[in-house]
Image (cartoon, rainbow, N blue to C red; front, side):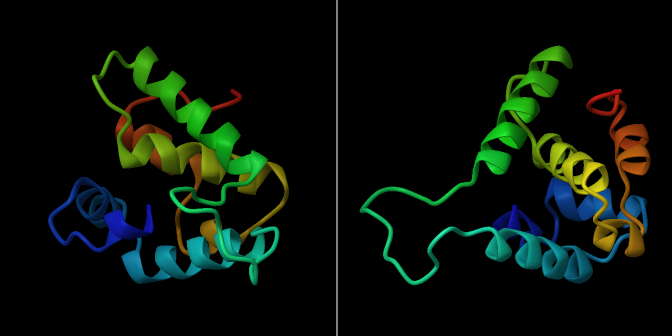
Length: 117
């Protein structure tokens, strides 16, 4: 997700522009959440693997389901972002909402039902 924010003409940048959310603020919020959940930040990862939490695994699974339901051939960044926002809202985190990004706003913009609703 963070790498996708680097693409100035990518789908994430365009999506954020249309809903008036700063990519820099989203990057900051994602970094805080992701780095805050890494189990053992000082231990090197095994070669060829990445550290993901059970929460991120659930978000990716949800993203796959949304893409399949929308009958699109691949999981897009917005499919991944939506479950991340949903989990944040469900646990009372307000960082994303403070920068103007909510489940309702993103779901409406990309034309999919909000997860868990």
